[in-house]
Image 1: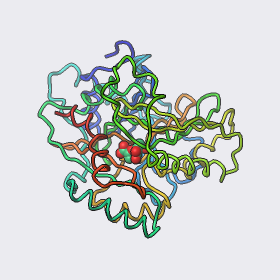
Image 2: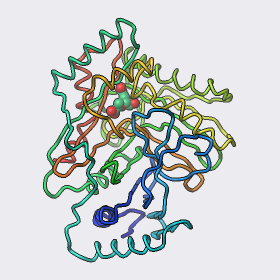
Image 3: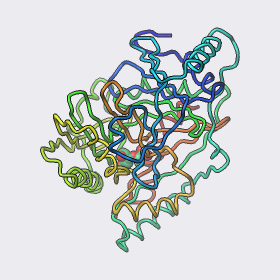
Image 4: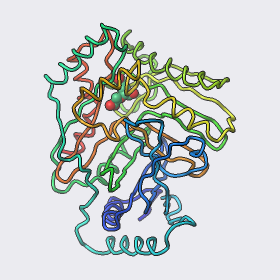
Length: 400
Ligand SMILES: C=C(O[C@@H]1C=C(C(=O)O)C=C[C@H]1O)C(=O)O
C-alpha cells in the first residue's frame, strides 16, 4: 500500500470502488512540492457552509464549484483520514464505527480479490455535454470582444469542454498517479462523490492558504505560453529570460489588482508582494505575483478573504458580475467544479485552497477536459483557441 509516501494505483482503485459500494465521498490530494498523499473519507457527503466565521472552526476538504449563489463553501467533513507518510487511518471521534468497520472490510476485500475495480461515481451531467468546436469557440471570443468594446466588461475568461473516449483500461487513479509525477509544483487531486462525480486535476493556482505560523498566501496567476522547445529539462529552473507580451502583462495585472483590492477592502495591512515573475506548470509558463501576510491570528480571515476572492479574474473576469453573467449565458456547458476551488481546510492546522484548473471529469466511457483563456481587448480569437488546446494537451495525451 505504501512506498516512499506514495499510494499504488491498485490501492486507489480499490478506494474508489469501496466508496461507490458504500456511497461515501473520497478526496485524495498532494500539495505542491510535497511527497505525502492525503486521503479523506466522508460518510456525510458535501455540506454547504454559509457563515464564514463558522468556517473557521470547521475542518474538511473544500469542493466549491465555480458558480455559487452567495459566498458559501462546499465542504466535505472527514470521518476517516489517511496520510501516506504514516500509512494508517485516523478515525475521527464522531465517526460512525459501524460504517468505518464496513468501509475497512470492503476496502480489504477489494484489495485481496481480483474483482473488477473499474467503478467510480459518475455525475448526472454525463448526458448534458457540449463540446464547442474551433468555430463555435472563436465566434464566442469575438462576441466577448464586442462586449469589451461596449465596455460591458474589461476581461472575461471563456472556457470549453473537450470530450474524450476512455480506453477500456483507463482508471481515474492512473491519471492521478501520472499527474503526481508530472506536476511536481501543482496541487494534484482526485475527488469522487455521489453528487459530484469523479474529478482529477493538477492545479497551478493557489487561491488562499494559511500555514501553522499564520502566514496567509494568495497568488495572481495568468497569461500563458508553452515552455520553449529548446529549453532542456535540466535548464528548467530559471525563467528570467522569458519575454511576455504587453497583452499578457496587462491580463495578469488585472488579477493582481483585483487581489490587492480584496486584501485592502477588508482592511488588511502589511501585504507583502513579490512579482510578477514566470512560473512553470509542467509544460506551460504563466506570470505569477505572490501575496503574503505573516503572523495573522484571526482564524476566520482566510474565509473572509475567500468570500471576496472567488472567482478571481483569472477564471471569471472584470467586472466580475458582468463577466459571470456572460459566462453563464454563453458557454453552454456547466463548469461545475472546474474553476471552482478545492483543498484541505483546517486539517493539521493548515488550509490550502487551489483553483480547480487543468482538470478532467470522468464519466463511464468518456472524460471531459476543461480549459479556458482570458479574453481582453487585445485578444485574437484563434490564439485563444490555441491556448485552450495547449492547456488540455498534457491531460489529453495521458488519456490516450
Ligand atoms: C482558465 C485557466 O487558467 C487560468 C487562465 C490563464 C490565462 O488566461 O492565461 C492562466 C492561468 C490560469 O489562471 C485554465 O487553465 O483553464
